[in-house]
Amino acid sequence: MYANWGITPVHEAGTGKRYAMAHGVPASAILLEDHGRTTWQSLQSSVEILRRQHLCRAILVSDPFHALRLRRMADDLGMTAAVSPTANSRVRSFDKQAGYIFREAVVYSVYRLFGI
Image (cartoon, rainbow, N blue to C red; front, side):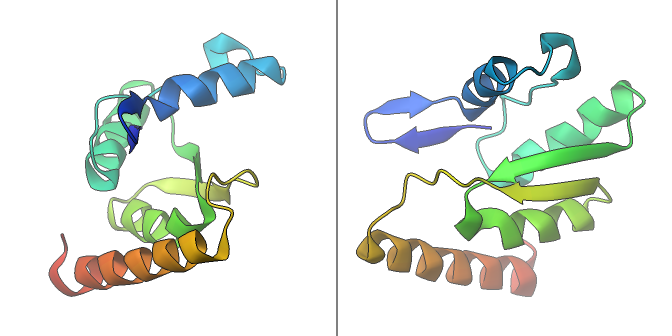
């Protein structure tokens, strides 16, 4: 996964891997998708990674505002996945939360209506 928070892009896959390893998950148990620039691209790539590894399930971790769209896209791609909203969102202020909720509502609606 990939995010652009300000000037320096943050590769969420690497950050997530470091976090999981710091909490006892062995590196060999972690598969990363770090090429997609959109949720859809990342999920498409993740489906392929799972297929190549002969795996059938995944845990998808994302910001709570993004979890509904992530769940729907994973379902639409035929991915068997549990979606786990992170408890440590970067979005803390009410103003920012409202903005993210509005953005996700619009983007989710566009996805549902037009499939993009």
